[in-house]
Length: 250
Image 1 (cartoon, rainbow, N blue to C red):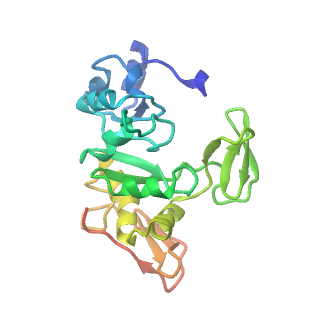
Image 2 (cartoon, rainbow, N blue to C red):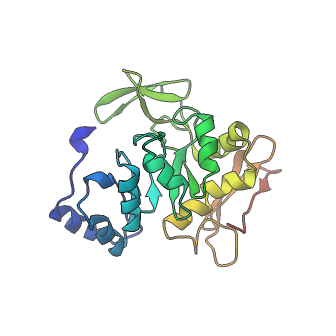
């Protein structure tokens, strides 16, 4: 909503400087930023992503030259790809340094466009955009004061606009395999290796390898559902017969 969006000011930079714990991820509209602002954020250690933006292709490329590497919810809430104005989408798909998040729920992005994104030279990342109903049976909820209705797995406003998703990451992986025909290994890279690399955590997360954190998921090969999970080596729940899927390459 427009009332929650702010143009950057000096005190905002000071506020961001206060966040020194963990990873600082900033999503912004490059066309609204003063020259050099993105570079300042990157120098300060932030990961900068484009989102909710009408930036042109040239504006996006300029932002990338300052250090922007991420794209939040590619295709959604941004200037669309067109013949005369490629916009952020083309800039993301053509850059080997770009990491772009995609909502693979069959609602936010058409399968043909999802396939296009998966064929780009950048690194796609699966995101759930999950709202409160995920994993439950809620039929409606409140989002920033607006009533949202859940119907057939889709979260929408009373006017019919999309308002997040009700899928979790396992469903996103499953959709990549079933809807797009991606190999399971590739889908899992998009859910693990690529996000970890984007956040600067690729040396400790996102792979099964010596020295990495033992955050793992076991998938049932028959329906690509999660049957077990480990966080920092601690197992939660267990069901015999699952196969652990590990990735040792990028």
